[in-house]
Structure formats: C-alpha cells, structure tokens
Image 1 (cartoon, rainbow, N blue to C red):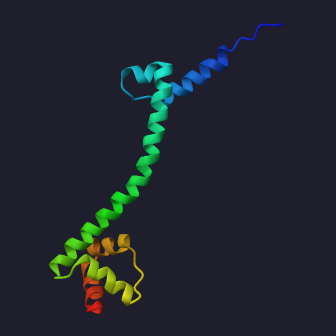
Image 2 (image 1 turned 180 degrees about the horizontal axis):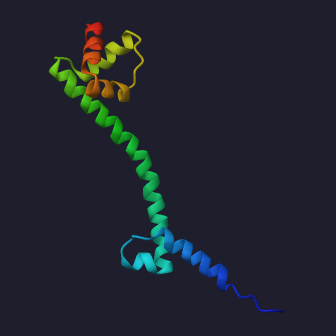
Image 3 (image 1 turned 135 degrees about the vertical axis):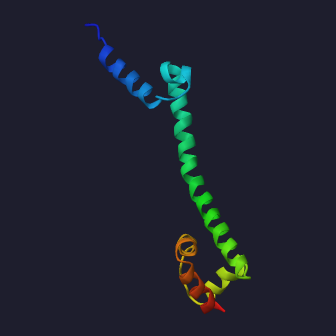
Length: 114
C-alpha cells in the first residue's frame, strides 16, 4: 500500500491554530499543543463574556437611572413600579439613553407619573 503524506494538511491545520492564538503570550502563540489548549480556554471565556456583558450593561443602565431619579427625589424601584402601573413599556436601556441625552423628555415622563 502507498504511503500517505499529510504535510500540506497538517501544516494548514497548524497554521489555522496558530493564527487563532496570535497575540497570546509566548508559548501559547507558537507551540501547537499549548495553542490548542489556549484556544479552547479563550473560546470558553469569550462565550461566558458575551453572557456577562448583558448583565453588566443592565446594571449600568440601572445605576444611571437611579442617579437621575435620586436628584428628583424618587427611588429607582418606585419609578419602575410607576411605569408598570401606567403601562409605559420603555426598557431600561431606552430610559437610560433618555436620561443621558434628553433630560427634558425624562422630566416629562417623571412628571406624568406623579
């Protein structure tokens, strides 16, 4: 039986692996075995990070809203409760943007709730 040489395929695979680890610290960016493991960890952390990003952003919006509301003598929880009672369906992201960019609109929303 003829001998099968895998030089091209193997080098392509190694190149692909090392390309993914470009910029990693020394041994992880140029040694195939270590690079392979580093890629697995990196993919795992990036997946987790995408989930955490959503939590972090929601917390940021809440903090911004609460800071604005405290200046207008209202608590965040009371504000959200009032929104639900008045059937105002704006999410925290939009409310945070309104508070930051258009405070006059935010003031109108706040006066309509009281």
